[in-house]
Length: 154
Image 1 (tube, helix red, strand yellow):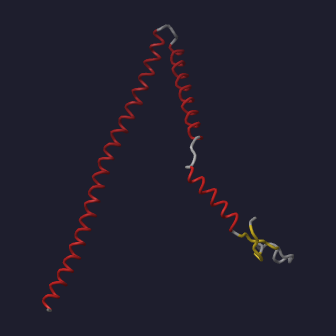
Image 2 (cartoon, helix red, strand yellow):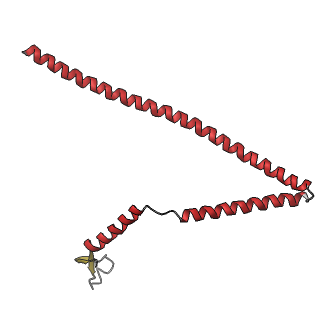
Image 3 (cartoon, rainbow, N blue to C red):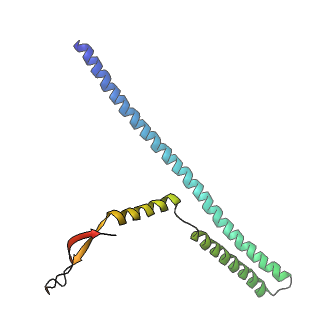
């Protein structure tokens, strides 16, 4: 009988060790996956950043080309660059106002608004606020008021 108990005990201890090993390996696997994902995300972000910079430089060259194109059509060079600059300012202002309009439309979800209303209503109905009575003593004039009683918010 003792050898049987010992073997069961050893099996239980071995099972606990195996479970601990499994958990450690799963944590290591998750960590390795996160590190790999972060590396791929960083590389993708770097590619997007470089593409963004290149598109901005290209846009600058396109605007210069448009200004010289207007100049070739007969406008003085300064006027052609002024036309392109005014167009860009107009476009930037339009996009800015569309952005402001879009931000003004942002509202919390209906559920969150409803929960906030219910919470305010509950607080009004169930929370009591302190009634402050001031003492007339000149020594206590600078001290905060004492809370003597509580009364309903309503």
